[in-house]
Length: 355
Ligand SMILES: Cc1cc2nc3c(=O)[nH]c(=O)nc-3n(C[C@H](O)[C@H](O)[C@H](O)COP(=O)(O)O)c2cc1C
Image (cartoon, rainbow, N blue to C red; front, side):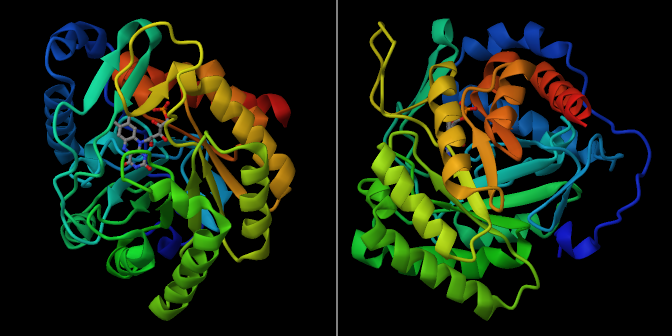
């Protein structure tokens, strides 16, 4: 079992962190951006998979205890980048304290028809309507059993597109059963805009039975400690957010991930394809949700802040809005490994400044 939780809280430092160098990305980016976005992503993932072969464990940069887990630092890679956990070791070399793989569904599926991933370089954004293409829970679990990355690995779970909403609970429970043994935490994704009706699961009538079933399955799994977090949309109204927070507060759930991509297009004056928008235009929205959520949840729940982190300052902003941990995706596509370095530095400095 690869969980950092299982290895105890006092893992010793094991020498210098071997982060990948940051200088090559600005040179490589024009070539990658000349390619179709999905092709470029496949190439990048393959490069990280190969880089992972040289993985060496490193000293934690700014370790933190959260949800009873030992995080080497507060910065993570958000779900969707390494959906199938093929490159966790190489991505770990960028310096992330945690990596969330997935979304993984119980059975493999192809996702939506192409094209389904678009860059908006002038706005530092991406639009995707991938619809959870993934290898399925068993394949991903098998891969994660062999990982060498010593940070925290979260697994983001969802339902298969072919499963009707009334049977969604069965899919989530099965995914948790198949993946719970290799995850440090599990993220319950009810907020991706590209699986029809998925976001309806955020309504209390669906959410309460879903979360209850997952909490019961966690007990059945008998894992000593497996935090569960709910990943929410930035497009919830204030009353919807309050209702979700009220429900979360009554349950033994560990936290919330805020936010997924937005269907909103506020402030964009260019034609934008249909799908979930991420990156810079999401920054203020995600920050607002994190801040509101912290007020609603109080101090006892973990919040992972995600959305529009494109600089160290933006990472620190989410932290100051109330996030315990911060994750990113789109910023990595535009800025490469230098962003990880900047965000780690900012979060570390912010920590020291508030001590
Ligand atoms: C191409 C792409 C694929 C994504 N796939 C997933 C996914 O499978 N599951 C999920 O929960 N979030 C997914 N996300 C959302 C991200 O995890 C994140 O919540 C969102 O992009 C906001 O962060 P960012 O602005 O740093 O990208 C995806 C985002 C992108 C850009």
